[in-house]
Amino acid sequence: MRLQEFSLINRALILFIGMVMILSFPTTLLRLASVDFFVEYYFDLVFAAFVGLALLNLVLTLKAPLPERFLAVLLLSFILLIFAIGVLRSTDDPIGGLRYFVLPLVVYFLLIGRNFLLFFITSKRFWAIIMISHALGLAVYFSGLMGPIYPGIGVQSIAYASIFFIVNGHPILFLISLVMIFFEGKRSILFSILVTLAFLKLVKFSVAGRLLYSIVAGILASLLLIVFLYSITDAEGSTTLARINYINPFSDQFDLYLGSSGRFGELVSFWEGKSFLEVLFGAGSGFKYQWDLGFASEQSGEIKGYLHMSIANYLAVGGILGLALFVYLAILPFKASRLKLPPKAQMTAFGFGIFSIVQSFFGFNLATDATSLIFIIGPAALLSVQGYRRYSPQISDTSLETKRSIA
Image (cartoon, rainbow, N blue to C red; front, side, top):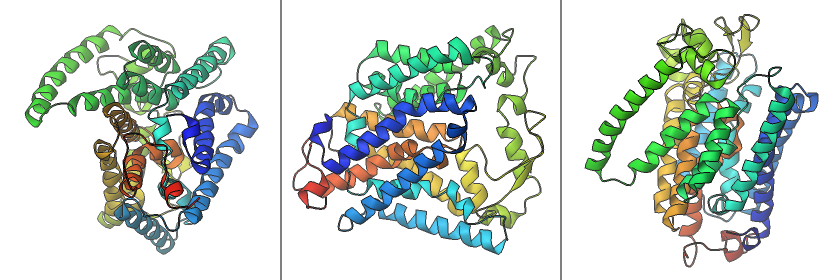
């Protein structure tokens, strides 16, 4: 779907979100290279821009129907609860701590009455531009940055490109994107892609077929994984293969603290000594803990206010309600099957959302990456937009605001 087919507001949102995604890899390289502006200001400015656009859209769409109203109630209840618990427990900064948990609500406001998701699930040209951005970034990395900066440089935009290409019948571009993901060194992104591909395959089968496919695929995948892990036990250095050995039980380099990039240490450090009530209701916004098991000696003992795992972070801060919110978000991508769109567009939307959820188990992208949340909540929001149109074409340039004179 072409940019010109959208309304003015939708086009502005597409251009902003698209530019953030195109620049995500180059700006991450600049941050890792310790360029002051990108370390101190850029990502906060992007967050502030998302907040501003979301509030503007909320004002412009006051008469529009709310998508997934229960989600809105859940998000607001969660934020109020963790703030109240933070105040009652006298955490260091209950207001500042909300910074990690308001992004889902910001994205929810941004999606009200908008259909810009259609652009990202149908535009081959956009994802080709994403590939070019990553190719240029990799060229810069290998020509001068390799070694001085952390070897895991990947960002999620290339993963969405690979999902788009495989779903829409571009196997060569898919393989090229996989190679890029491998050389960018993010094991979690590569693993999340493989899990997403399994989900994309599973949804095509009947219930009995899914069970059989899961058993057969699981056995074959296990055998291949064992062979692969045995074959790389001697890999050394800072390459992706060598870093996989940190989580390879057949390797002498196996070290779960080091292999998880400190995530396992975070979980142990935070949950150690917590009471049942703290687990049940959460620690509240602004919580802090001492990271005693850091994977690097200079970071051991660091005071942290978050965990690098979304489900653990939601449970840590909001207890059972936080866990319920995460589970609800994890279900939303399945609503893509109800969209009035061609099958490939439905599958692309579903794949984007599932990847975002799987990836959230390896990082706190639900607090830092608005595009992940756009692809998670987007199908349900778009379903609401389609439900309030006078007609529902397969792919339409008519957005809710133009039909109802909202914008």
